[in-house]
Length: 407
Ligand SMILES: *Cc1c(COP(=O)(O)O)cnc(C)c1O
Image 1 (cartoon, rainbow, N blue to C red):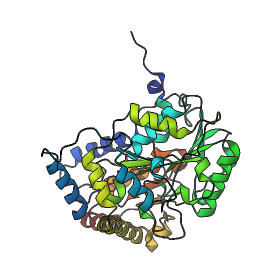
Image 2 (image 1 turned 90 degrees about the vertical axis):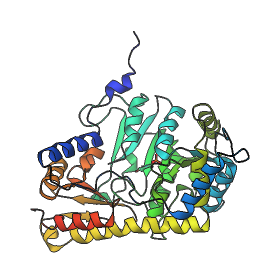
Image 3 (image 1 turned 45 degrees about the horizontal axis):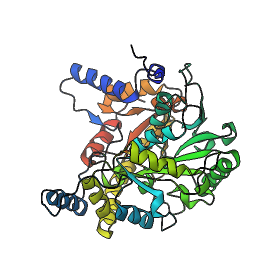
């Protein structure tokens, strides 16, 4: 018989979100009248916006006509969309052939791992979005979990105590460094100086940064960088993955992109972009043409305005939650709220308590589902992630209930 990929046997059971779903189900079945509100999973809740929706609807209709029909497109994506992304999001600092359109950032993060094989060293922010580590385990770049993390992964603690920016000296030479800013789950945004230090470190030590900018559209402080390519030197050490999921509510539509600069090389001098082009043409077959029509519309002036107000809605939700969680009662209990207005998440510390205990308490007393910070890595212990993805009325109701949480 065929052997199982050892990567799967190394993955520890109880992936975060299934465990949350299980606890929610159990609570609901013993409290059938409870109106549970979810501030948990990072999924968008508000409808697609008019200009973008119309473009997709028109495109879909045209596909049903002789003249409007098209089959497979270029695997790297529609050239007009690649051009528009380079121009609008990167002010022309990136060329068209360095932009690759995809079905989303998570999918790109998984595929990127095929470029580096199983011998690569991996470093991640701790806490981090789970796919960086879990993907590395599946591909064999990390080993078994020894209780304090997977072997072969360098976990870089990001805590309030270090302003959520890791100690880079822990990273081995020639490592793949996953870096997410604004970060999921902490919401922390790296400053220009911090990213410059990261880029300089990577260039000096033969590392490649996989920069996840999926939440760039939440950055409202103009001094904060939205792309790694705003930093000098990034083109020789970084890949950026990005997505329309959060800016345009495309979590279900599915559309993302990656930027692999021509100057990024392997040890032997081969451009990484050549292999990435190979991956996208051989293992991927192009993003949906309907979704790409939506992406093109999203980059029109009307589309950009719509995306901004969509994101503003979630940012306002976050501000409403912050106001509740920072009242004197919460402060007196030592609760610390980290949110500076540039991300969809509030990262909240309940000192000396376990994340899962706080999760259960909020579920039991307030019928609100949150996300326990420990599920994102060891440094997430004692934290809870509150997501601003929700309807305003639910957020307001959740805040009313939280006012009565026993602290
Ligand atoms: C939501 C999210 C993404 C987006 O993934 P898609 O596959 O494009 O929907 C990527 N990275 C992080 C950290 C996210 O939270």
